[in-house]
Image (cartoon, one colour):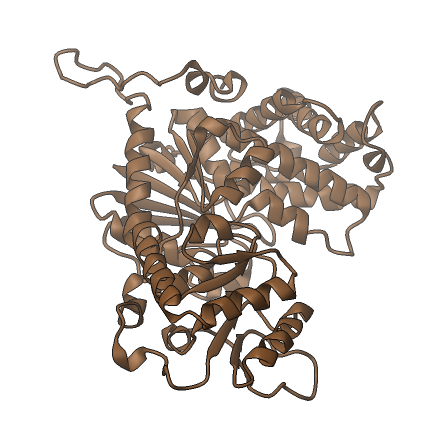
Length: 512
């Protein structure tokens, strides 16, 4: 199988996000060939270099999502367009602009507009110049002034339109790349059997185009839900409310389209799946593939090596993972000290902004196996966004844990640790005292936690999960044969299991 691995700001860049799991995936599925299609976010990221790539990576194609359009990927100058190309661009970009300014169900309009722009970009060699043209600004302005448009969009100024059009051009830059087959015989994404996007958004856009042009199935993985992260972190103060409104609508429409076209969408835990479903994903296409961790790093501690075990005759020690700035940490510590005066606390995180550190408390920037080994109990603190990796590390080290009931904590630990209400210092202190006073219970919970971690959170489980999904997706995809030989067994792929998967979005995949 030949897999096109699509990334934005990630693998194969050494300074990218999620590079480690992608590298392990590619190496773990050595029986498959991979082609990497990478979008970089900054010049600094490009300067950081790449991972050392394994032999089953057959090619790497890279393009920037920063600065101006890449040379040779912007197509003809917009002034060189003929009347028909201008008319088509105006109509398609107008549909896209209307879809992000009007409320209600505008998914069909966004899909039609984006699909039309994709076809035009392929014919003209790119659309970067057109997307930054005066006509694009006029189309945006018309959509913002249309009856029923969002009130924030109605107040958009010309300077706002310039910002929006520039950022939309960057997000849609994959439309203008030469990744979809060229006249010189470079087939690009036409040669892959499956596209695997490591995030939604611009990273998955080449996969959308490959599905439209060649019928290639698309798999989308999100260990961080891109749309959620955009809502939470990408609203800088220098952007006006009108700009933020339009960009949020654009990313919401694009994410919904990607979800509707993906054969399978994966998340790292149940919380991520719920966010994906809330953002428009079909529940029947959602899968959970837990992040994989190298269990060998924690084997010496987890298997009970005596040299790594905490001293039973020394003071009890708590390892607090998640930072030391939460007020309830110190409230719980005061309660614990009243019952265990010799208690020691190691905090993994940033020290509080104070000149004094409480007695018996130490701070460290990171937590390794030796730190977990020194702890009688491991505590997880504060809000947890995404998969709680530190909690899984403690489980690999066979340590009993106390955690707040937030995020995916309950899903990760199952019944192998204690869960308390969030921001409740009294409950936190009581749970810690219960474990500190019962060594046998700590040992049982720690052993169960390690067994659960070895079953669910190893690199091997992660790679095997994606390998199975690859086969599942490809088994339902049409065979790319012009004239399949009926005498050859299995020359046709099996039919999809449901009509929904066959006709997910005829306005996108069925039109060219």
